[in-house]
Length: 111
Length: 109
Image 1: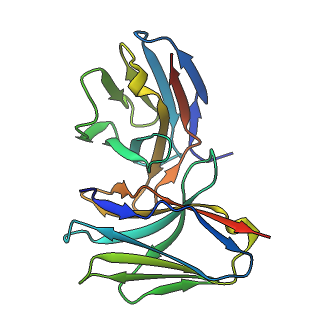
Image 2 (image 1 turned 90 degrees about the horizontal axis):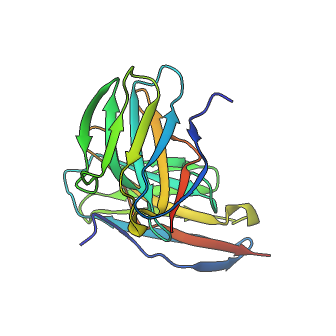
């Protein structure tokens, strides 16, 4: 399967714990995006990388959130001191110049 | 006001019917527009791009009205497999996708 992959697919954690998600984009896609989707809503943009550079961050991305793409390939999204409001589907997408292809997402539940 | 607004539905229509969705966007500088489809508990997938001249892909027709800042999607001869959530999407800045809430469609046999 050469599509976007995300790991883990599901994560259940207790409030206050840190979690980290990984995204592997389609090979040679230079752009990588993170979105968050809550129940009944469309995805919301979080942040965007072109190669290893983080070029844009949403105001939704509080200081508890950090994203990296150290070698311009895979990316990680870390949430520190999780809150119940962080419960959502975290979607990663990648593109070269046009269409963004989404991964299956990581569903986070914060108890 | 949301940047992209859609009627969340749900729309329940019989198989074979024609159904239409609209959405409106607030940023008049938006340049690119799309419809995405999302099945339950799956990731969004691009259905079609939307152009001012209108475009058609089989049973699906998309239209853009820049003056009124609305985008439409028409599905003819609906199939059971068309049941999904349809997301109206606008591009802002460097390829940042801005999604509407989504419209849930159920096609009934």
